[in-house]
Length: 125
Image 1 (cartoon, rainbow, N blue to C red):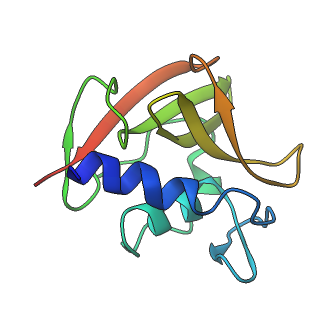
Image 2: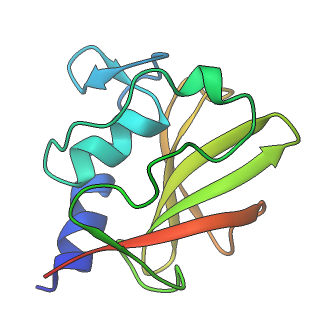
């Protein structure tokens, strides 16, 4: 299994977990950053992203990740869902996994990403 396939599988394992703003523990709930943190093996990601107000945060590439085209399973995509809102998703072989606030849970959606992709990263190794 490649590193990307492992990330996608870990993201898929969160499907069904309830949505919780700022959530980092699958037992309590996850938000989009929490899904990515779990998928990457518990990497520590920022909690103050609500302050970004629709702009890409300073600091660039997350730890252990490299910028990429976002086309492979396990790639982490930063998407612009509205002028003032960014959202993280994990690409799978058939679609993507994300914390869906409207559905109030983590879901896997088939097909292409419906939002513009601002940046994409791939786990190194």
